[in-house]
Image (cartoon, rainbow, N blue to C red; front, side):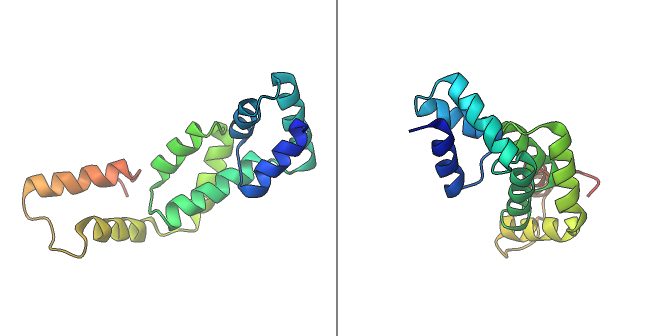
Length: 139
């Protein structure tokens, strides 16, 4: 089976970044040249688009998983998406969101509806949780 057809099948299951698709084609024992040719053709046809992947991932990570902009950007870097595309996708998605509401939802999830943190240690733990979720101290 050709690398192009394999690429289409993989993209039919879920959105993948260029780096992810190339790695999966290589895992399926296509040569690097075949994988690169397939990726190029898929990019030309619009079937493969890192911008689309970045926006979809950022929407899901923020709205469903409750992640902040910094964590979303880090996770997109791991997917092999370029900095310019990441910046554009994060700005696009987070421009429409109330980040304060995301933080409030993350706090409620962490506290599980319990009482507010009363000790310095509990507040520090909550603050660290929010930082790991990708929220900035300014937010």
